Every structure is written in C-alpha cells, then in structure tokens.
Image (cartoon, rainbow, N blue to C red; front, side, top):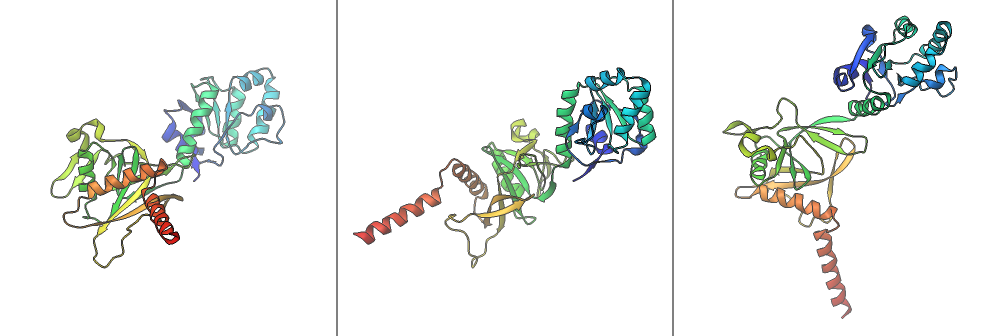
Length: 312
C-alpha cells in the first residue's frame, strides 16, 4: 500500500509536529520506501547509495554542514539532491530552512516541512507512522472479544446470536473490542490487530433492545480499544445430518490478511449455552498455546491402550 505526503500530514501532522513551509500543491507525491533518510553523504556529492525514494530529513549535522559552505556551493549541493526527485524534505529541531533550500524546493516542486522534534525522535516516530499507514488492513463481519487474553472473533449470519453471546461473556468479566463489524490490520511483526470503527466503538446492538453503551452498563473493564486476533469462531444453525468436529485433533484454519488462525465452527441450537462453549473454546486454545493439547493427549492414551492390549 502506497501513501502520499498528504496522508502523512493528515494522519500524523500533529503527532510529528509537522509544519508545511512550501509545496502544498505537490502533497500528492508518493513515498515509495518506508524508511527515513538523512542525506549527509549526498550533500557532499556522493550519490552511489543515495536513498532517493525516501523522505529526507535535514538534522543539525546537515544544516551545520550546509552553513559552512558559500551560498553558491550550497545551491550546487542541494540542487544535486533535488534532481533525484526526492518525495519531500523535513527540517528538524524547528530550524528555519535555509533560503537556498526553500528556493530549490519550490523550483523542483518538492514539499518542504519543518518539525520541532529532534532528528532521531522524528525518524523513529515517522517510521512507525508510515508502517501503520502502509500496513495491510481490512474489515470483517463479526464481533471481537478478549477472553482471558485471547482475541476471539465471533462470525455468523445475522440473527444467529453473536451479540447475545458476547453480552453473556461481558457479564462474566470479559471484554468487548468491536460489535458486528471489526477492523483488522497486520503490523510489521506479522500480528493481526483488531479494533472497532470510531463511530461504533464501545456500543453493541442487542435485538429487541437496541443500541447499548457497554462501559456505561458494565464498567470500563468491559471494553478494550484493540486486541490481537488469536482465533476465529463461526456460529451456525444446528443441522441433524451435518458432520460436526468431535475430537479437534485436526484443527481447521482460516486466513485473515494472509495470516492463518485456528477456526472453529460451532452449531447453535435452543438451550445450548453458546457463551459457555465459546469461553471453553478460547480457554482450550490458550492451553494449546501453553503446550497442553487435550485432544492429542487423549488420542495418544487410546492408541497406547490398544497397542498394549494387542501385545498382551
């Protein structure tokens, strides 16, 4: 996913303390590489490994070096950098851009910013911001909960009882992340994080009741702003002739943003406490992550018993 300087300014302008000096009409320039570059070597005339597709940050070292040159030499060195068609320039430490820097930025149509942050802090924070903005993301129909530290996404057709099941789990002390529609994003470490849309955050729709504000009813401990996704559970109507999983030895999987997660399909029928079953599924998954797989252990015991009897 590519982003532009306009995306940076709109989504992280305040976070990065950015002030646009010039080049407002060129904010559609695309940032092709996530990392940030300091053009120290390029200013000396060495361009062999110049990262021209990255945002260029002029810190104290670059500015001090440029000030040591004559105005004519500054223009020559800066023009060499501008000719590489860099996406944008940021001057750190709230320093005023040199006249030659501003003139050439306007000439080449390169947006020029300044920030009050020190150079190293700006590089770290802007790198995180760009990673967040370029991370793969999507939207899933379902209710997201955190159960004993396990992020569970409940899927199923409308009216199957996702919100009602979630409400029962919230009453037991677990936390709601998102109801009905869940936003997902994959971070740089490969984790898939789930969160609610800002408009519907902390609200649930209960059929026959309407919209409820969860923290007002159950307290602030009943909600989470985001949670890592660990498993997906789909609720579906019970069918007599359907073949349901009975052992759990061979786990099913589902892909979310190209990451595989355990997938459980749970039948819903009158009198079946789905909150209990979802809770048990989540806790059983937690035991598996700790190395305790009940299905495999029982299977090994059964096989061992048959082998002993066969050898007797």
